[in-house]
Image 1 (cartoon, rainbow, N blue to C red):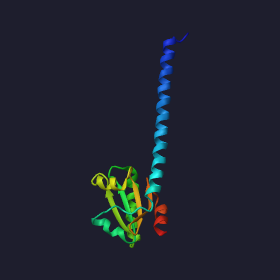
Image 2 (image 1 turned 90 degrees about the horizontal axis):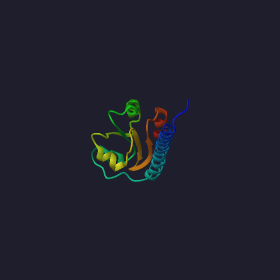
Image 3 (image 1 turned 60 degrees about the vertical axis):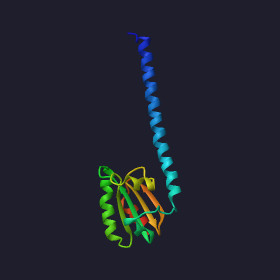
Image 4 (image 1 turned 120 degrees about the vertical axis):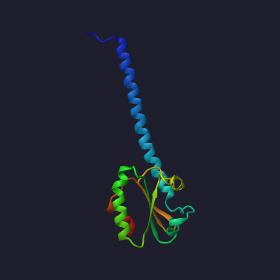
Amino acid sequence: MEIPETLLKVAAIFFDIVFVLLVAYVVFVFGFRLYWKRKVKKMKGQELPLLDGEFVRLRKGKGVIYFHSPNCQPCKFVDPVIKKLSKEFKKVHFVKVNVLENPDMARKFGILATPSIIITKDGRIEEVLAGPVTEGVLRAKLEK
């Protein structure tokens, strides 16, 4: 049995479209990762934006700003780690920011994804961690 030529053309067009979409997805994902790495490098060493409330405590000493969302699954794994470390490190100021309730704060810091953790020292950004972080990694960053 021979396959009709029109069906072969339709199948070829379909596979071409699928291939283009797959390539576009891969380019988008890796492009976003490269963009985020460049952005993080630029953020290091910058002074914190003018902030009030809880953020005033971050001007002196070491601090952690934890950006999270209540409907974010990775945030649910990082929350207990943040709570545990906030009890252990008494000299480090911890500030939690819910990006759904406070989107302006996330915009000020340029946060693109949750969970994101910004480690500060004397009012300057020392480290930016995007995505879920293990307790060991965060502990090592805070002990520096």
